Length: 193
Image (cartoon, rainbow, N blue to C red; front, top):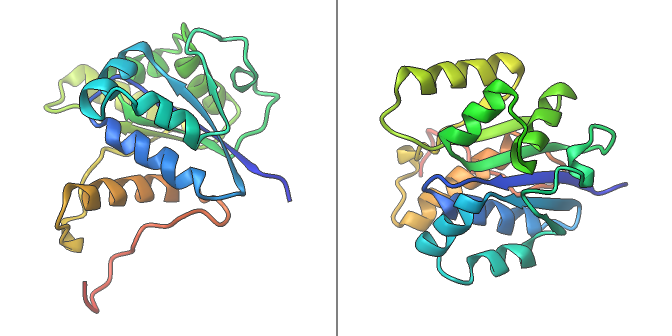
């Protein structure tokens, strides 16, 4: 059985730890081949929120990293099959670019390909509060077929550490792709925590 190709985009919004954790979790499965795109703003956010070695760590977790300005690479083509794409975190600039089809960089171009090919596209939209333009962009991408999944903690799991919150959000995001043999989030249960 062939490996499932997943594209992971990381844009410049706060919450870089979520994208890093998704890369780590996907990298644990030999059945998943992760392709990474990091926006220039995300490189700065990764350095601030994670540390100077964050990008090197990410590159070790994935099969391939693509330069954000290389709109001619394989993942920019609909002829290259994927199991889906996650953008985590997804800045409002990136989300708005996707909503308007302004594919001026690889991150937005690849998201656009996922929409036109009717493949799963999960956008971990990270902003608060939201103005009407943000909400309209979210509505537009949803109408186009994307899933907007803000990074909302599952307080019912009673997380004890920030890493518990990040793990739950990352795993829940991966769940939305419905991949074979991928790590799964702990589901809600009334029988105990």
